[in-house]
Length: 422
Image 1 (tube, one colour):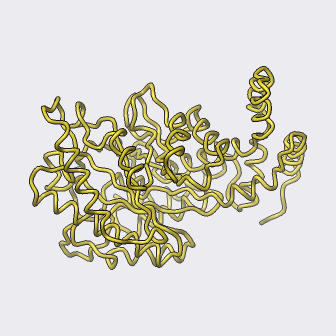
Image 2: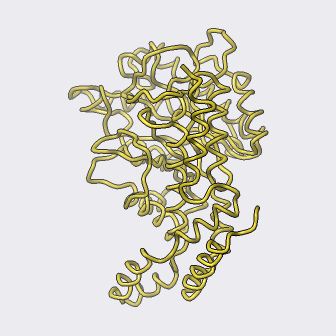
Image 3: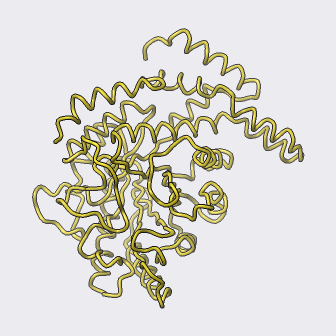
């Protein structure tokens, strides 16, 4: 780390004094923030294309925009991710989909995937000093074209997807063993119907049975952690989604899996921040997919908005950091894709930092004393405390650009690397 610029240091010392007056040690907060890893999603870099060959996106997934520079190969994607990591403070993780297997020119069906098709990702992760998370890919495949996978009425098709999910758990186990930290393996399926079904129950029975079969293979959570993810609706499943929130909440509680809460997968009047404490009353752990819906699950780049701050506040205030896996899930092809990673991840970290700087115990004491006036007044005052000075200092100590200086590096990378991809 280079010497701290005088103005940056002065601003930090002033912030340190202000927070210190409330018993908050900013140095300890930054040490804690450094330990919190966020799982960046590989699919932002290539518009959810994967490496199985050119194919149309299905399963209710749409990516809009045609900004130049989309990654076309695994090496290009890894290079782009490395650039993003260079501009984000701390050490983080990468979230892979099964469709990003490197098949070496072979035709390999998803139910036949093995760890060897991800060995390059593992070797790269070791070089980068990061961990990997994983997701089976239940979309953009001929056997998912009718909108059903694990809940399919055709037993052969359903078994194909069961076998795919089983294969992915073995790959997750491989990641965990090789990288020394558990791989979070998240199951999301697009199953549902455009119009109102007559039978809502039978597909859910089939989904439950499929999940039971998938999880019947004994794999240690030391290596692979299973999560299930719900959705409210999608394109092609506007009226009915088999894997609803209620379904997966019940399944996770009964089977002790991790529950994934995606910020874009609920009704516009619902917020994930209000579900965290309820879910963790009955579950050991949660997986958060931090995203930004704009009227629907449109997966916009994460902003430093009210809901992002509320999510991180809930995690910190409830002492849920060690029970929550934080991952990002958005894709935008209308802007520089590397910049999208950097903007979204740095915003998630800023929200975490701001929450960690709250004097939570003192605020909780005011609440127990029913001094709601002081609670409200202080919460509002803390909004304008100089947490930004603490963030700038953290970025400098982590050898990443301070404030918007990272944008110049992305623009230069666009000129030297992304512009060559025609």
